[in-house]
Amino acid sequence: MSASHMSTPRGASWPAAVVFDLDGTLVDSAGDITTSLNELLVARKLAPFPEETVRDFVGDGSKALVQRAFQTRGVMLGADELQTAVATYDEIYGMHLVDRTYVYAGAMDVMADLKSRGIRMAICTNKFQDKAERVAAHFGLDKYAEVVVGGIPGRPGKPSPIMLLETLEALEIPREDAVLVGDSTFDVQCARAAGVAVIGVTFGYSQTPMRKLAPDAVIDSYAEFAKACDSLRTKAA
Image 1 (cartoon, rainbow, N blue to C red):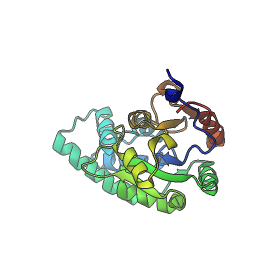
Image 2 (image 1 turned 180 degrees about the vertical axis):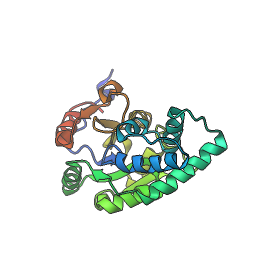
Image 3 (image 1 turned 45 degrees about the vertical axis):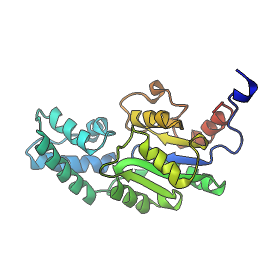
């Protein structure tokens, strides 16, 4: 390989932008999701689940969440029934969106530090757009994240790279100058498909241990975020 085609380290100014997933990455929303899901189940005369069980259902969107819950209770919903149940769940969840949800320790400190250094930020999440914006505003995440890109009808969510690439386009940041921070298989797959570096967090909802997903770096808490970025700066892009 010629010198002109050799990969080079990213350098001291990398990253120009950090894109965060929301649920399981910036905020723990499992409590409110559990409350909402159980309201739906009890209304259908099905037994509720403990939060620990619901955490295993979370991560792939409302449809998968509701479907897994009903299947676990031995109920197979038809397509129309599932659509109705999901719509009802989303309506209930909208009423409990920030009752018990909280920001992970250290997340706001990391975002404040990034902003102080001129690093751009965004949120890219499969959570529906209106709910993502409400959560970001409630906790003040939108003071740091310039762009909030959530799920909208007709656009594929993660693991498709489309919404991540649209997020970077809105920031006007090239993919090689950005990093995605996420907690799930979908986040890692999305970043890989988009050609974006990815830092995986272990404290989210992934059913597969994050290190098995082989992101570019792994953190067990936000106290390790700066070190993870430092390690990626010295690696070839």
